[in-house]
Length: 447
Image (cartoon, rainbow, N blue to C red; front, side, top):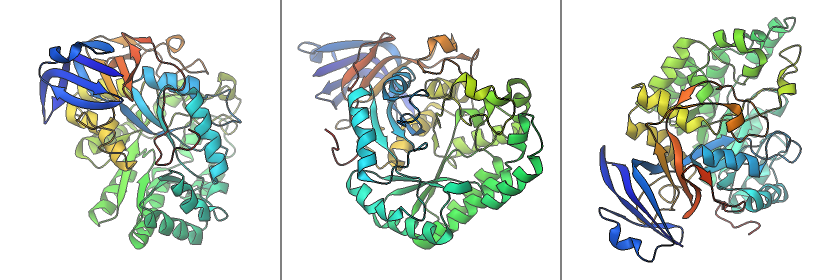
């Protein structure tokens, strides 16, 4: 299939250039100043109308498909939401089903190949004492990311953590770490256990617990040489710890999420358990520091940590039984553009870095993905950065029917989305089909 995008506004080497993109058989053939001579014979010509055209978003962290929780989300609904949000590649993170065998990986991949509108990868995990030996086997099946949960019943022993990181290092994979110190969290939970207000959850999980766990994993990384990626950094102290470790030569990267870049504990007083997320929300000072960390490159990526639930699972009598997680993926890129670029916190180049280039590098996909360049996969998004749209849950594509960002006025919504060289959204309308998405692992499982 040959696709030509004309009248595209490209951001190249710090400046805007008007031109076109020629796509052949799923790959960018060329960036051209005048695409008119390529139009003849094209299967589809898309007019970008001088709108910002960027590499498709890559979400490193989304809970899209768990066969026991398809009432929350599945590949069809989740990938539809991703596409309408400008995300062309999404990495599915373990939820309750541990991905610790090739058989479980196949279960997720085959469902994605059948139902996903966008490209996808699958992270393995949770990595514990009894399953880290599967790391090499899963790597052979195309997995590069391995989730390690440092708190509660899913945490590995120190011995298993070291063994797992040794294996991750040997395959040039990445350990994706939920960093909260188990003892400090247990201490906070004991202190708050008698409370029934929504804020109790957030106040029981401190920034100190996050930073302590990041430090531990960082030093284990220094010993083993493993690349550790800190998921959903939520605090100033956590970010400072990442920066300190990086300055010491630790192979460490980090992500944060839209909810940590916007909401604070003050918002919990209004929205209650709807804002229950883990790690917890912090303060306005933390929010601003995380934006600064993004702009300075201390935090490498914005990820969604998309973890929706039904309204009923949020409207419980106490915070302890409420579901922890929120639907995010469809609003992630418009949010980052609006509250980042338009508010002057990050520039256009950094916006593209944190939503596409850096996630591709962390996932070992760059420059195959995350780049608008000849030879790169044709995952392309045309954004309307002028038109403002109010977030309304009934206009989003989640199964659960609600959004914590309801009522926000956002710009930077995609009007055209191309996935692996095929139009999925044109003029804001879904034209793609389930199964358009490709598995990005190195081994074509299920295909």
